[in-house]
Image (cartoon, rainbow over all chains, first blue to last red; front, side, top):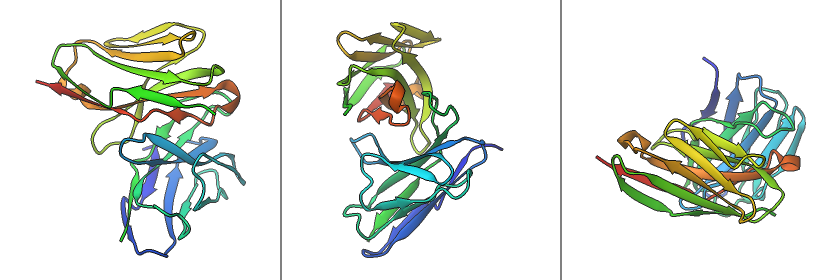
Length: 114
Length: 113
């Protein structure tokens, strides 16, 4: 069954701790993305990656880090430097490198900082 | 950079009526405008998109119109059904920044049976 898998679905973290959200896709897509969703603010781009071993900052990258060591995987680390990390995080991928194409989303990870 | 504004934030319609959601964008170079639907507790999914070389596109009960001069585009849903209830997001991007879709803030549509 092809798609994007995010884990965990729910995550609780204490202030000052780093946490890593997993995103795996078996769609053979080149591009992967991380978005943050807050109520009333739509989806905001954190990081994106067009190819393996390369990634770029989105609009709200501060306090986050990513890696792209494999085509299938694009984990997101929410660091202690992120001032307001409680949010819903969505991972996505797309296939049409260089051309606007459909984003395929995972089911999301809800992070709550206690 | 691009800024996308979406209205209304909430919309309630009677089943069978039409629903219209409007978005405006700021970057005149934007040329790709998708719409995503997110049902409660589910992932966003693309429902329709339009590129700047066309003014209107239809797919069964949904249609999108684009006015490049005014820099706005709209989603039209006719004969609404309860399963149309969801949050709808518009977005815009440029050809040379295809990875940087800028999303609107979303519209929560409720279709009353």
